[in-house]
Amino acid sequence: MSETPHVTDVEVSRALNALVCTLNDQRHERVDVGRWQAIVTGALGGEPRILVSDPAGAADAATLTDREGSRLASVWREKERWIGRRDGAGGRDRVSAYVPSA
Image 1: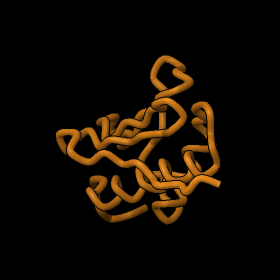
Image 2: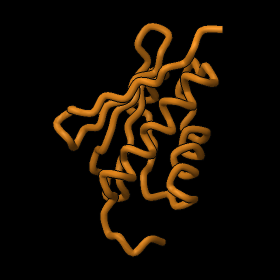
Image 3: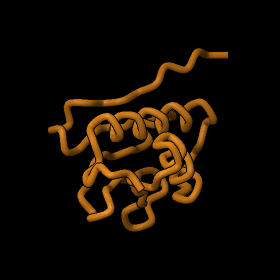
């Protein structure tokens, strides 16, 4: 367990970027909380400091929260792409990965 009591901005950015890039690269079509949690935890060096949840069982949206339940980021499907946005930062950081067409 990390000695840092709260999730850092760098950790949120790292987890969100890893998740959005992986989802778009692997062309995920719906939320899979278990798989997504593995991606986020892996991006944080194996520590589950950020949790993935799908509000009301949504197939096309999920949230990233800290252990206390504070919402850190949102991920949703827009057309055929996954988009991410940090929530605690006033929504200023929108993450979208470039994936070249084949």
